[in-house]
Image (cartoon, rainbow, N blue to C red; front, side):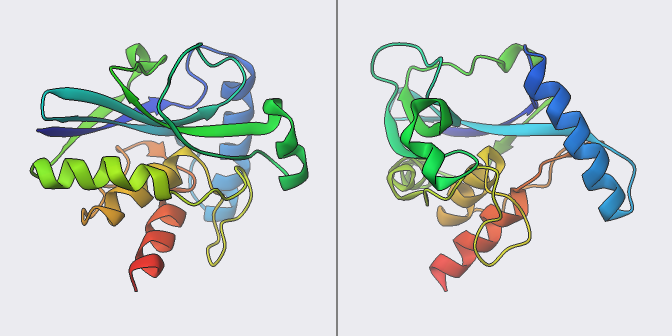
Length: 185
């Protein structure tokens, strides 16, 4: 059994998302009274009972064909826009899947646990809240995104999620932690 948290630069392998992420981080850093950091995207790899699963939130458009283990879908930007596949995301629990930008990974963090912990993460993927990506998550001050999903899954499985690597900022990370703790409470 193993669970690994991957920290990948936001928009790795592309220009638009990376550029928009840097602009967002520059503005966000000013409001936090900090220096801009590297914005990152979180994904998980879970290995249990001889099977490997990739758990990630990603856009529906441009997804590879076939079964990607989609457990939840949600809107991007505005709920109304979510009617179009171009404004929808999916939460994948993809057996033998891949993380397209894994080669650009900045850091990885092994998560302690056992097979029950790994199975709790896999089972929880079907219950991830389908909040609107990029909008403030209810009861929090942060947007809902891939980082929120990874943090939510870890807390739901009984794991205290680690902080992002030094020099990195994971927008939405605390939103996932807050929502998961309120779900348990």
